[in-house]
Image 1: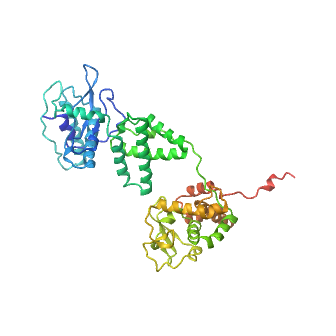
Image 2: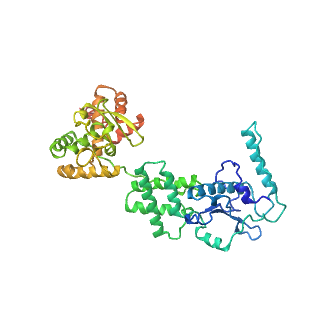
Image 3: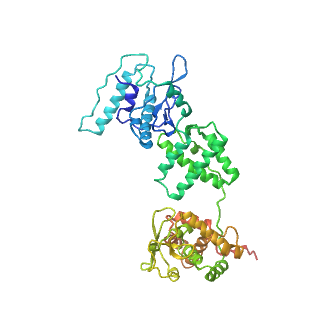
Length: 460
């Protein structure tokens, strides 16, 4: 005799269907996964409720266990229950009703599956299981009984997976998709959300309970204590984490997608004048040669500060005049080393190839800390040695040297060629992937200036 539990857990494919179009939304609740707060010693299952035609109220139905509890790790157990949940939702949307005899319904579903398999495997017979269908009854026979203890235990987690557990699951998936620095940002965002919910929305216990209003209130709290730019960044992190949960069928929809980004004024790193950067270079020759070479890699090789921090001795190929580095949007890039940098380099042949090119005390050494910490170190060193000494503007940073020298390059190239030809050559130097991206960058740093238009203002 087939039960709903048997039908859900039977290994056959049901086509993908959107959860957002619930044809019988008023008759059943969206199935949820009970994970016992991650406790593998307890039974996990899928649960749902269906409307009683006599009382008109949603009533809890039998749990779907299948083989999920045979697995001894959270990921496998959750993956199988997610599949059961998806199949159950498909059946409910297709018309399954636990209050009536579903013999014909089951037959129709198997017929659809058999037809699909026949089309996919033209020359093979599809396996159709021999199933004993129940006689007409007022309700299907329960596949497993539920104890009062289990019902009581289920109540705190009644609306889905606990928030911390769900976010940790999403972070684990993200760990395989993004860099270590980005993963740290995602982790920080998830911790901030959990802390805010505990302090401001203590009744929200499960990830499914976090709706647009709760998420918006959290983002508004971020905005009030920081900036719209920071708020938008955290919004992006949250949306990505919640989208992973939606894709893995842990939540029915991503509420963050419905929240728009705010208009923000981007931070601008102010470029240096010709006089300023020459004074800085001359001053650092005697004051801090390591910091000077670090800045010249940013200026002449047009690298970002963190990209310079990642360089190891082996990445600099003096013979071929090339260097390899991990760029912002690609795993590995190769750039030409201009002669002006080669002349500044010490002899690297005697250094350990695995050593970092830049360290606080010497060129070529060990420095066991995260890239972001290295970048922050040189930023603080620049402030103490250069910024305070010359009383520079707060927006004149290490990154500003990259803007400054890209501007110098473009203005030099455009003197003897058309703007398009100059940009085409510059694009190969800066590493921008498209002309549109380069042109936007040049506009943002005001590198493209018009010719003197005084004659058009003179009406004499």
